[in-house]
Length: 449
Image (tube, rainbow, N blue to C red; front, side, top):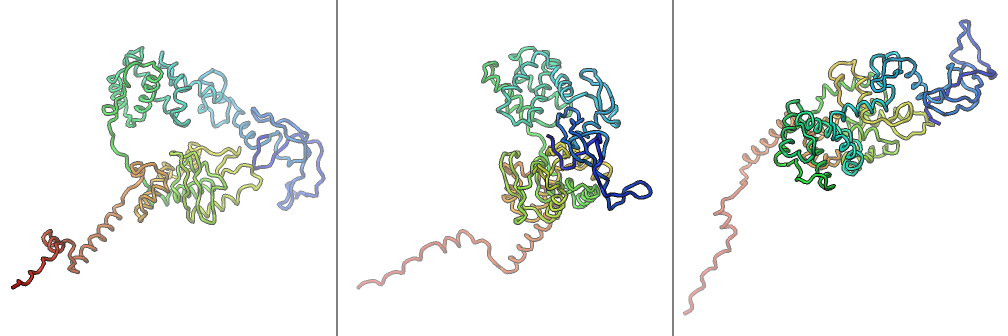
């Protein structure tokens, strides 16, 4: 049975349970009394697609229908009205009143089928190849979360091959086609180059399967042109304070704790969502970042006062009987994904204006790294805490602030002046060094008679 941290509510009453509660003149129960519980027979959950049975017993008379959990009740509410026509099958789309004209599909399966047809349909005769590659060849080469990006990259390329180049055979695809595709993507305003790696891997797989008898058409020295380097995007202290004020104003402890972890620990949003209760060490004030991570390595990161405060508040608000050990979860007890938490932040902060309305969680990682580096942390230590694989990847998160440049310049110049006034010689000439290092000449011995 699907479980929840809240009580189960029933429906059809059989007989009242004796109670000593009383009502006031208005017919409402006083604040010091509870309404009498009512006996309910065992009944199936009325939630859409749920087969759970609610056991017989006494429950508070809260609703006229039966649901085994808040999640089932929410699903029922969201499928109460017809709000549109499915773009895939043409059938009715059910949802809540505020989804009229917004919800376009009757199920997630139909949404996926529609999007698949929209993306892969224009690839024509190359569609079976893409589907086979995504089903077999790509499985051992990419992580699961990368699959959608790979599919989109291949779909764009083969759509270009079919519609612009009018090519219908793999053997007709050469380096010149790759070059024209890059130019086509640049004209559309695309700046990323991940699709080149996706294409190179595809043709490498085809060559290994002996289905493409030419060298790989993606030539690194020609096609992998280095773009403009990306720079760090930390929040200023003023903007960070304004965003935090908006997050605090929402009153949502999960959002406040997630923000505090991003600010004080620099975790990626997926790492935040994956945190469990046992990952926090309150004695050492550290948290353990478990797998999966971007580079598939675990690490331990210290936290400070803000995380300590809101972790305590979050744990104090949890039901002790809650069966999940995820720190961040929804009402159905499922842990959040990074995209879900981003959407939650966006919906909660959109009413507050700039900079809160455009808040990006990943910029907290930029802010964290920039702050620590500008306050004297060694780069090797920062690299370990942040979980970066290379110095180049870490460099994209760090910005040297003008105040740091000025402070260190003044400090270095002050040291130079102190050395100059103390008349200390920093260097000696090669001649002087030779005279110091040369062995003393032997004194002439007295002449013998």
